[in-house]
Amino acid sequence: MIFGFNGDQIYVLLIDRENQLKNVISEYALPGNLIRDDENLDMAAERVLKELTGLSVIYLEQFGAFGDPDRIKKKEDQPWLKAVRSIPNARVITVGYYSLIRMSDYELNPSSFAKNAKWMPLNSIKKLPFDHLKILNSSIEFLRSNTKIKPIGFNLLPEKFTLNQMLKLYEAIFNKKIDNRNFRRKIINLNILDKLEEKQSGVAHKPANYYKFNKKRYETYLESGFFKFEF
Image (cartoon, rainbow, N blue to C red; front, side, top):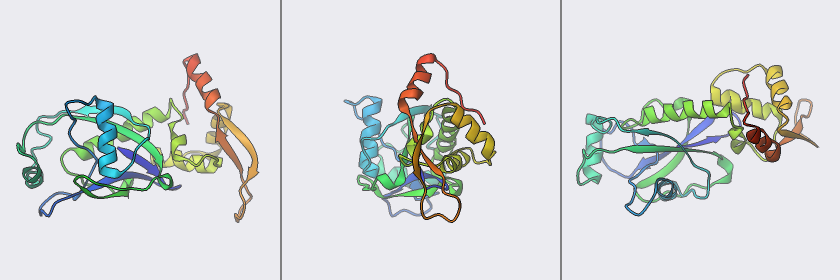
């Protein structure tokens, strides 16, 4: 599961599975494939990501496992399974990983059975094959919970950003409006941001200061055993 942010919306990276079949619930699916005998879970996740999207050397974190016996037995998924698997209905256990990246930093170069990979707005995804929608929803809940105890959202922002850009990111992650003043007060009080002398330029409104994430001070929070960001 790869999440991206364009400054306004959260996006999800999907692959277009190589096939000429009809009656498939959706051409696009979450990136995934089988683990090899000589791989551990992390190695497999990194390889599959590289093969299907062209992305590599990005942070991946495990968020859950999915093993419902009926997860690949939907009628509409059978044609694709029969076309690509020798035993179409062999049980599959999926271990889910997710990552957060700046979409502009990476170029997609899919291969293997992915003929295309593209970013889809999270809020526009209504159907996916198998139980991929359930996996997507689970990853979102994990992301939201994680965001409250880790400043992981900084992976989606530019190296320098305004507080308003950060607010928009959090509103996109949690899919709700957040009080501007309360958000700014709380994030500044955490003391994990460095305020820069540099300000925005070429904007119609009053230029805002840029900030940077201070990893060292955040790690001090971790050593103390406490970090929580509620708003």
